[in-house]
Image 1 (tube, helix red, strand yellow):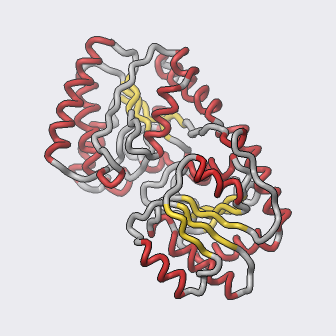
Image 2 (cartoon, one colour):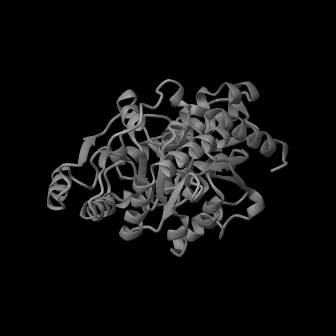
Length: 360
């Protein structure tokens, strides 16, 4: 599995699994880090060093497989591109060692590459004789060409309940909106700014914090756009925040807005964090998000890159503070019922047990 560093969704879940008392008491586990990237910006980039790293990884995992004799190998692959080619080599080496493999996808993209002759050939080999674990039912269409539904299991992610340590602050005052993710165009940053401009033109009162590291959007370009749209008195770029510094913004937010159309988006943990804090959420139908937000109950779903619809949904919550509060409460209840770390650990362990026993 991927383990931090670097820190991203898959590596965070990997760390949760590694530290899980439920998993470690149910199985005799051996954990191996399969990451070959040192930083987020290094992911997906080619280097000669990575070629040697892959051969070293294969050698190490084959040695572990021969010595440990696992009943099942849990592996977190990439769906496309150079990272997939690396995972193809590793997984096929494990199969040749006689290992049963379960592939847990934290990303998507098979559908976008399946018409390329080489990728199509590799996918047919890669998905043969494996069980595939997905984060949401909506993601099955990404691998449908290669995997029968009977060989797919669904395991939604979960996160620690940080609200017990960082309770929400008092309500009242100007409504606060929050965007929390990498500052990327496909995460919907420009769309959200345009929607906020629409609301400002309608004389709606709000503030919006953008929290996240600068990626393909530069800080200078963001601030220039904010100024051009006349939002510099209500929109603030906060940069990357982690741990308790990040929790401050979740504690104070009334509405969480995440209008993503990021091609690899699957099951964003930021939405779980917002729901854990009792915040009404607005997002898109990208990836497995429809399995997180209950549209009209815990928040709103909007079409990708539909600025008018995004502005209208934000406006609805600004104009109806009780509805906003009720959605946040419903989101918190949904989090407690389905998305806590404890729920994930038991769900994950039960799935692995069923795969080992041949019932899945």
